[in-house]
Length: 248
Ligand code: NAP
Image 1: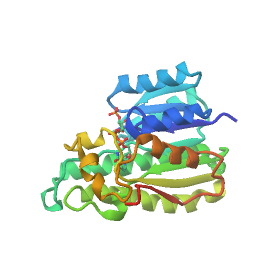
Image 2: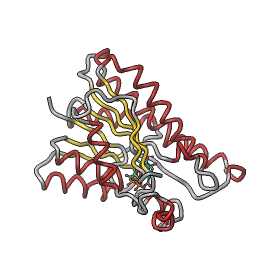
Image 3: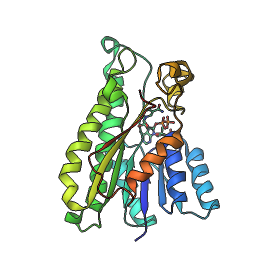
């Protein structure tokens, strides 16, 4: 059976590294993005140039109709899904909870929590043996923030990732008998553009001295764990959390 993966937020950062690594291991990949079409196309082109199979699909994971269309496109263009990586996610500028506006909170939870739920639902409808599927794997990209709480920076982001952790536990148990494994990775400080989007492009270098390993991680280092959890190399691993945070 073909290995077919959907990677949300696959145009940049951890998602892009995951798409490239998965494709190098024989996965056909659907690269979802919301705004950066050129970045997504560039990753897909690199995969095709190397002899792999990749498509790009625009869609905002926080918009239910977009997610439904995205999965329909995937069905038609690649075939039956075997792995979902719930990677699309956002941070915001550093703020105390007593300063957070409703608009910020709605965006944070809509993208990071509702988006992952919409995608997980569509994936289970396709992969579960209960629905006639052949099984598969879901990897949620959580964060070390869910353990640490991110005080004075973004408690809302940490809480959204906490919700993803609980979803990982509950959904893993719910579909364990239906051929689907559900796991999560918890990256620490990883060198990607997400920090610039939160107003601190040098955040990883600034905070590196506080990391036991003394350095931030790379998107490729996170991708290694995600692709392992997606694959048949982890057949008895479900409801697990991999800390990819340099000991933090
Ligand atoms: P990034 O470099 O900022 O990339 C974010 C990706 O998500 C992009 O592909 C972006 O698409 C996509 N995206 C954003 N909002 C979206 C939406 N509403 N719908 C669909 N796609 C959307 O981020 P990253 O650092 O790789 O982070 C990836 C995941 O890892 C996130 O869940 C993040 O919370 C988590 N994480 C990151 C770190 C870290 O230090 N970097 C640490 C812990 C956890 P466009 O290119 O179209 O904008």
